[in-house]
Length: 292
Image (cartoon, rainbow, N blue to C red; front, side, top):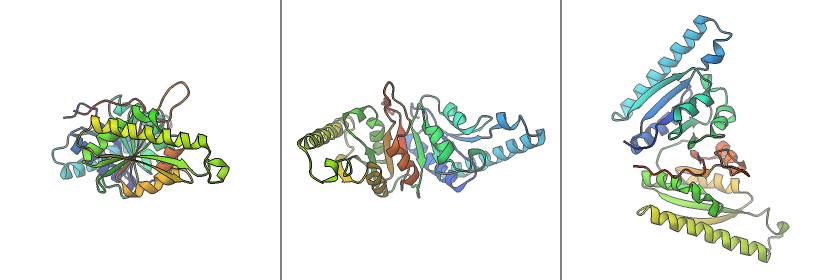
Protein backbone atom coordinates (compact mmCIF):
# COMPACT_ATOMS: atom_id res chain seq x y z
CA UNK A 1 0.00 0.00 0.00
CA UNK A 2 1.19 3.54 -0.81
CA UNK A 3 2.41 5.76 2.00
CA UNK A 4 0.24 8.55 0.61
CA UNK A 5 -3.22 9.28 1.99
CA UNK A 6 -6.44 8.18 0.37
CA UNK A 7 -7.92 9.36 -2.90
CA UNK A 8 -11.25 11.05 -2.21
CA UNK A 9 -13.82 11.25 -5.00
CA UNK A 10 -17.05 13.21 -4.71
CA UNK A 11 -20.27 11.67 -6.04
CA UNK A 12 -23.78 12.99 -6.67
CA UNK A 13 -25.29 10.52 -9.14
CA UNK A 14 -24.45 12.55 -12.27
CA UNK A 15 -22.67 11.18 -15.33
CA UNK A 16 -19.77 13.54 -14.66
CA UNK A 17 -19.39 12.19 -11.15
CA UNK A 18 -19.42 8.62 -12.48
CA UNK A 19 -16.58 9.57 -14.83
CA UNK A 20 -14.70 10.98 -11.85
CA UNK A 21 -15.25 7.77 -9.88
CA UNK A 22 -14.00 5.64 -12.78
CA UNK A 23 -10.85 7.78 -13.09
CA UNK A 24 -10.21 7.88 -9.34
CA UNK A 25 -10.69 4.11 -8.97
CA UNK A 26 -8.19 3.36 -11.72
CA UNK A 27 -5.72 5.81 -10.15
CA UNK A 28 -6.14 4.31 -6.68
CA UNK A 29 -5.80 0.77 -7.99
CA UNK A 30 -2.59 1.54 -9.89
CA UNK A 31 -1.11 3.54 -7.00
CA UNK A 32 -2.23 1.01 -4.37
CA UNK A 33 -4.06 3.70 -2.45
CA UNK A 34 -7.32 3.56 -0.60
CA UNK A 35 -10.33 5.06 -2.40
CA UNK A 36 -12.87 7.03 -0.39
CA UNK A 37 -16.21 7.56 -2.14
CA UNK A 38 -17.83 10.60 -0.54
CA UNK A 39 -21.33 12.08 -0.69
CA UNK A 40 -21.70 15.52 0.88
CA UNK A 41 -25.31 15.69 2.08
CA UNK A 42 -25.00 19.22 3.56
CA UNK A 43 -27.17 18.08 6.47
CA UNK A 44 -25.79 20.70 8.84
CA UNK A 45 -27.53 23.32 6.69
CA UNK A 46 -30.57 21.31 5.59
CA UNK A 47 -31.51 20.28 9.10
CA UNK A 48 -31.99 23.92 10.12
CA UNK A 49 -35.10 24.29 7.95
CA UNK A 50 -36.16 20.84 6.69
CA UNK A 51 -38.34 18.28 8.44
CA UNK A 52 -36.96 15.19 10.12
CA UNK A 53 -38.47 13.08 7.32
CA UNK A 54 -36.69 15.16 4.66
CA UNK A 55 -33.37 14.87 6.43
CA UNK A 56 -33.76 11.10 6.77
CA UNK A 57 -34.69 10.84 3.08
CA UNK A 58 -31.53 12.72 2.08
CA UNK A 59 -29.43 10.45 4.27
CA UNK A 60 -31.04 7.28 2.90
CA UNK A 61 -30.60 8.36 -0.73
CA UNK A 62 -26.99 9.23 0.00
CA UNK A 63 -26.27 5.84 1.54
CA UNK A 64 -27.97 4.09 -1.40
CA UNK A 65 -25.83 6.01 -3.89
CA UNK A 66 -22.67 5.26 -1.91
CA UNK A 67 -23.50 1.53 -1.77
CA UNK A 68 -24.30 1.36 -5.49
CA UNK A 69 -21.14 3.27 -6.44
CA UNK A 70 -18.86 1.21 -4.19
CA UNK A 71 -20.34 -2.06 -5.50
CA UNK A 72 -19.79 -1.01 -9.12
CA UNK A 73 -16.19 0.01 -8.41
CA UNK A 74 -15.45 -3.17 -6.48
CA UNK A 75 -16.72 -5.28 -9.36
CA UNK A 76 -14.26 -3.61 -11.70
CA UNK A 77 -11.40 -3.40 -9.19
CA UNK A 78 -11.87 -6.38 -6.84
CA UNK A 79 -8.64 -5.84 -4.89
CA UNK A 80 -9.20 -2.11 -4.32
CA UNK A 81 -9.63 -0.90 -0.74
CA UNK A 82 -12.82 1.21 -0.78
CA UNK A 83 -14.45 3.21 1.98
CA UNK A 84 -17.76 5.09 1.87
CA UNK A 85 -18.46 8.38 3.59
CA UNK A 86 -21.67 10.40 3.94
CA UNK A 87 -20.69 13.80 5.26
CA UNK A 88 -23.03 16.23 7.01
CA UNK A 89 -20.93 19.12 5.70
CA UNK A 90 -21.17 21.09 2.49
CA UNK A 91 -19.10 19.63 -0.37
CA UNK A 92 -15.97 21.81 -0.30
CA UNK A 93 -15.33 21.36 3.42
CA UNK A 94 -16.26 17.68 3.27
CA UNK A 95 -13.76 16.95 0.49
CA UNK A 96 -10.96 18.97 2.09
CA UNK A 97 -11.47 17.27 5.44
CA UNK A 98 -11.57 13.77 3.96
CA UNK A 99 -8.35 14.31 2.01
CA UNK A 100 -6.49 15.73 5.00
CA UNK A 101 -2.88 16.76 4.34
CA UNK A 102 -1.72 13.70 2.42
CA UNK A 103 -4.56 12.63 0.14
CA UNK A 104 -5.91 13.70 -3.21
CA UNK A 105 -9.31 15.01 -4.31
CA UNK A 106 -11.07 14.02 -7.54
CA UNK A 107 -14.25 15.69 -8.78
CA UNK A 108 -16.27 15.71 -11.99
CA UNK A 109 -16.47 18.75 -14.23
CA UNK A 110 -20.16 19.25 -13.43
CA UNK A 111 -22.56 17.86 -10.87
CA UNK A 112 -26.07 17.86 -9.46
CA UNK A 113 -27.90 17.19 -6.22
CA UNK A 114 -25.55 17.16 -3.23
CA UNK A 115 -22.75 18.70 -5.28
CA UNK A 116 -24.68 21.57 -6.79
CA UNK A 117 -25.92 22.37 -10.28
CA UNK A 118 -22.54 23.33 -11.71
CA UNK A 119 -19.71 21.57 -9.94
CA UNK A 120 -16.87 23.31 -11.74
CA UNK A 121 -18.37 26.74 -11.35
CA UNK A 122 -18.91 26.39 -7.63
CA UNK A 123 -17.69 23.32 -5.78
CA UNK A 124 -14.91 22.33 -8.19
CA UNK A 125 -13.27 25.74 -8.07
CA UNK A 126 -13.95 25.94 -4.35
CA UNK A 127 -12.15 22.64 -3.80
CA UNK A 128 -9.17 23.69 -5.91
CA UNK A 129 -8.85 27.04 -4.14
CA UNK A 130 -6.59 26.75 -1.15
CA UNK A 131 -6.41 22.95 -1.20
CA UNK A 132 -3.45 21.49 0.66
CA UNK A 133 -3.41 18.44 -1.65
CA UNK A 134 -3.56 17.83 -5.42
CA UNK A 135 -7.03 18.28 -6.94
CA UNK A 136 -8.09 16.56 -10.17
CA UNK A 137 -11.04 17.78 -12.24
CA UNK A 138 -12.05 14.99 -14.61
CA UNK A 139 -13.04 16.28 -18.03
CA UNK A 140 -13.64 14.86 -21.51
CA UNK A 141 -13.94 11.14 -22.12
CA UNK A 142 -11.48 10.88 -19.26
CA UNK A 143 -9.72 7.53 -19.78
CA UNK A 144 -7.22 7.01 -17.01
CA UNK A 145 -4.55 6.11 -19.53
CA UNK A 146 -4.66 6.21 -23.29
CA UNK A 147 -2.12 8.42 -25.06
CA UNK A 148 0.82 7.52 -22.83
CA UNK A 149 1.63 11.18 -22.23
CA UNK A 150 1.36 13.57 -19.28
CA UNK A 151 1.79 17.30 -19.93
CA UNK A 152 3.00 19.74 -17.28
CA UNK A 153 2.48 23.46 -17.88
CA UNK A 154 5.68 25.27 -16.88
CA UNK A 155 7.02 28.81 -16.94
CA UNK A 156 10.53 28.42 -15.58
CA UNK A 157 12.69 27.68 -12.57
CA UNK A 158 9.97 28.57 -10.04
CA UNK A 159 8.00 25.48 -11.11
CA UNK A 160 10.59 23.09 -9.71
CA UNK A 161 8.74 22.81 -6.39
CA UNK A 162 5.75 20.87 -7.79
CA UNK A 163 6.97 19.12 -10.93
CA UNK A 164 7.91 15.90 -9.15
CA UNK A 165 4.18 15.33 -8.71
CA UNK A 166 3.76 15.42 -12.51
CA UNK A 167 6.70 13.04 -12.92
CA UNK A 168 5.13 10.60 -10.47
CA UNK A 169 1.93 10.67 -12.51
CA UNK A 170 3.88 9.82 -15.66
CA UNK A 171 5.79 7.03 -13.92
CA UNK A 172 2.59 5.54 -12.53
CA UNK A 173 1.15 5.33 -16.04
CA UNK A 174 4.44 4.26 -17.64
CA UNK A 175 3.94 7.37 -19.75
CA UNK A 176 6.21 10.13 -20.99
CA UNK A 177 6.24 13.57 -19.39
CA UNK A 178 6.32 16.69 -21.53
CA UNK A 179 7.21 20.02 -19.92
CA UNK A 180 5.39 22.60 -22.03
CA UNK A 181 6.18 26.31 -21.89
CA UNK A 182 4.29 28.96 -23.85
CA UNK A 183 5.30 32.26 -25.45
CA UNK A 184 2.43 34.68 -26.04
CA UNK A 185 2.37 36.37 -29.44
CA UNK A 186 0.25 39.22 -28.11
CA UNK A 187 2.77 40.14 -25.42
CA UNK A 188 5.75 40.33 -27.75
CA UNK A 189 7.25 43.46 -29.31
CA UNK A 190 3.96 45.37 -29.20
CA UNK A 191 2.49 42.92 -31.70
CA UNK A 192 5.02 43.64 -34.45
CA UNK A 193 6.33 40.06 -34.50
CA UNK A 194 9.90 41.35 -34.12
CA UNK A 195 11.75 40.53 -30.92
CA UNK A 196 13.86 42.98 -29.00
CA UNK A 197 17.22 41.87 -27.63
CA UNK A 198 15.70 41.84 -24.15
CA UNK A 199 12.91 39.51 -25.29
CA UNK A 200 15.38 37.21 -27.06
CA UNK A 201 17.47 36.98 -23.93
CA UNK A 202 14.41 36.25 -21.81
CA UNK A 203 13.38 33.49 -24.23
CA UNK A 204 16.80 31.84 -24.04
CA UNK A 205 16.79 31.96 -20.24
CA UNK A 206 13.30 30.49 -20.06
CA UNK A 207 14.17 27.68 -22.47
CA UNK A 208 17.32 26.84 -20.51
CA UNK A 209 15.42 26.84 -17.22
CA UNK A 210 12.83 24.41 -18.61
CA UNK A 211 15.56 22.15 -20.00
CA UNK A 212 17.30 22.22 -16.61
CA UNK A 213 14.04 21.17 -14.95
CA UNK A 214 13.65 18.34 -17.45
CA UNK A 215 17.19 17.11 -16.81
CA UNK A 216 16.64 17.19 -13.06
CA UNK A 217 13.51 15.06 -13.44
CA UNK A 218 15.31 12.59 -15.72
CA UNK A 219 17.87 12.07 -12.97
CA UNK A 220 15.24 11.77 -10.24
CA UNK A 221 12.99 9.43 -12.25
CA UNK A 222 15.23 7.13 -14.29
CA UNK A 223 13.27 5.19 -16.88
CA UNK A 224 10.71 7.98 -17.37
CA UNK A 225 11.03 9.86 -20.65
CA UNK A 226 11.00 13.61 -19.98
CA UNK A 227 10.88 16.02 -22.90
CA UNK A 228 10.43 19.77 -23.02
CA UNK A 229 9.12 22.25 -25.55
CA UNK A 230 8.25 25.93 -25.79
CA UNK A 231 5.40 26.80 -28.13
CA UNK A 232 4.20 30.18 -29.35
CA UNK A 233 0.51 31.04 -29.41
CA UNK A 234 -2.05 33.76 -28.80
CA UNK A 235 -2.23 32.74 -25.15
CA UNK A 236 -0.86 30.12 -22.79
CA UNK A 237 -4.40 28.90 -22.14
CA UNK A 238 -5.12 28.33 -25.84
CA UNK A 239 -1.89 26.39 -26.39
CA UNK A 240 -2.45 24.20 -23.32
CA UNK A 241 -6.09 23.49 -24.14
CA UNK A 242 -5.01 22.32 -27.59
CA UNK A 243 -2.22 20.22 -26.05
CA UNK A 244 -4.80 18.56 -23.80
CA UNK A 245 -6.17 16.78 -26.88
CA UNK A 246 -2.94 14.78 -27.04
CA UNK A 247 -2.39 13.65 -23.45
CA UNK A 248 -3.99 11.74 -20.57
CA UNK A 249 -3.50 14.44 -17.94
CA UNK A 250 -2.50 18.09 -17.76
CA UNK A 251 -0.74 19.08 -14.54
CA UNK A 252 -0.38 22.68 -13.39
CA UNK A 253 1.06 24.24 -10.25
CA UNK A 254 -0.95 26.34 -7.82
CA UNK A 255 -0.66 30.07 -8.28
CA UNK A 256 2.18 31.78 -6.43
CA UNK A 257 0.99 34.71 -4.33
CA UNK A 258 3.17 37.57 -3.10
CA UNK A 259 3.72 36.21 0.38
CA UNK A 260 2.69 32.56 0.12
CA UNK A 261 1.98 29.75 -2.27
CA UNK A 262 -1.29 27.92 -2.76
CA UNK A 263 -3.37 25.66 -4.98
CA UNK A 264 -5.49 28.61 -6.09
CA UNK A 265 -6.00 28.28 -9.86
CA UNK A 266 -4.65 31.18 -11.88
CA UNK A 267 -6.08 32.34 -15.22
CA UNK A 268 -4.46 29.55 -17.23
CA UNK A 269 -5.53 26.82 -14.83
CA UNK A 270 -9.02 28.32 -14.70
CA UNK A 271 -9.27 28.13 -18.51
CA UNK A 272 -8.05 24.54 -18.49
CA UNK A 273 -10.60 23.56 -15.86
CA UNK A 274 -13.34 24.83 -18.16
CA UNK A 275 -12.06 23.79 -21.58
CA UNK A 276 -9.48 20.99 -21.31
CA UNK A 277 -10.07 17.82 -23.34
CA UNK A 278 -8.59 15.62 -20.59
CA UNK A 279 -8.44 15.64 -16.77
CA UNK A 280 -6.58 18.53 -15.13
CA UNK A 281 -4.60 18.27 -11.91
CA UNK A 282 -3.72 21.33 -9.81
CA UNK A 283 -0.79 20.68 -7.48
CA UNK A 284 -0.06 22.91 -4.48
CA UNK A 285 3.44 24.29 -4.69
CA UNK A 286 5.93 22.51 -2.50
CA UNK A 287 4.35 19.05 -2.92
CA UNK A 288 7.37 16.76 -3.32
CA UNK A 289 6.48 13.72 -1.19
CA UNK A 290 7.68 10.50 -2.78
CA UNK A 291 5.46 7.53 -3.49
CA UNK A 292 6.47 4.23 -1.95
